[in-house]
Length: 464
Ligand SMILES: Nc1nc2c(ncn2[C@@H]2O[C@H](COP(=O)(O)OP(=O)(O)OP(=O)(O)O)[C@@H](O)[C@H]2O)c(=O)[nH]1
Ligand SMILES: [Mg+2]
Image (cartoon, rainbow, N blue to C red):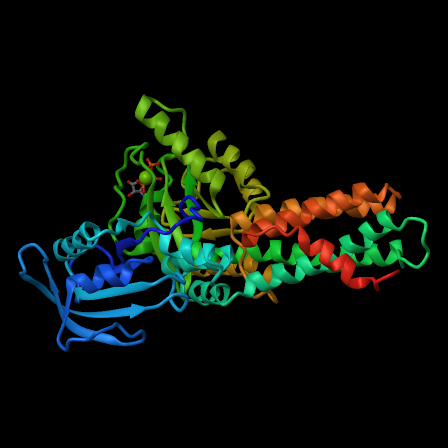
């Protein structure tokens, strides 16, 4: 979402803020030092005014400066730095919707001196100007793209700074620990430094590693924002596409009796009583017979690798085949459900097959008659909710970037812990703590250096 940071941004940017296509209203927003002049130059207010007051809506018309033609009847607002979304001078034109009209207004702002904004650039400016941190900037996008109401609530909390606060408190703890370790470097011979390895171990374990573990567990909550990546997998002809169609109650995927019908991955959104799924139908497994099928299978495998939940479809009217066994093996250790499809037909799965399936949680359905579909829906919901419940108690949902940074921080703090335990030189411990601190700083988009020094010196009296 965020473009290349451009801290020296003193140009004025402009963009259409509403989606393309017909709509009741559309918005063009302009931000930067010339925002008021550019929009003011295109706007003819109903009542003439000498200056634009912030927090007011002005009614009037947008005029094409070249032809003097009235383009549209609009409402315009002006905001002054730093009291705007971007912290810059800012203006918004509310016109009628419609891509051609909005494009024309955008073009007029550009001809008047604005530059078309890059994706996410308004939010980038809000971040660069210090109004929000990176987690809040990311949450703006989550709010827009959330796949469920719960995801919306989580994104809104993140915008309010919930994750930022958690990271800030972790950083405070890390800075305090680092300050103690660094003072042990500087004042090695002094006894009054209060350097107690046991206290430090406790602070690292309980103040850093445990809260980070909780945040990492809360990463699972991202499914509310992103949707649960759910892959229908199985042998050719098992009934995956028929199941997709049943689940979404629509003839979306092609179903035929011939094996190898599905080639492309078909992805669709499904909301199961508030649980958002990104449901994917994939090419069935067998030895590929031609290049198209081989490519389809590669796509299937990739989606399978990325899946949050695998729905493994088995045709119970046939004996279990090596492909079924391979997929069953693949599902081990991954969140999955085994679907025994075609229960309207006599079971021919074989004794060995039955023994193999006995160890799995299975749901019996017929995609043809619809039998068992309610149970399947329930089982999917239960599975998602149970894997998400591990993170209860946390209010936030770190995304993948946060997760990776948290893992890096945790790894560094664990190395610091080991260093303290094995009596390593304090410089080495301090280095690891600083590495962890930097990783945490990366989450909110800021890495402190002076904070550590401040922390050390604020703890000592002058002359000591
Ligand atoms: N009797 C019966 N037939 C079914 C059932 N589900 C699917 N079929 C039939 O099985 C055949 C294959 O169904 P698909 O849904 O295309 O199977 P698929 O797993 O998507 O197959 P590929 O895309 O080739 O991998 C079709 O003829 C379906 O009508 C079921 O529950 N009972
Ligand atoms: Mg199919």
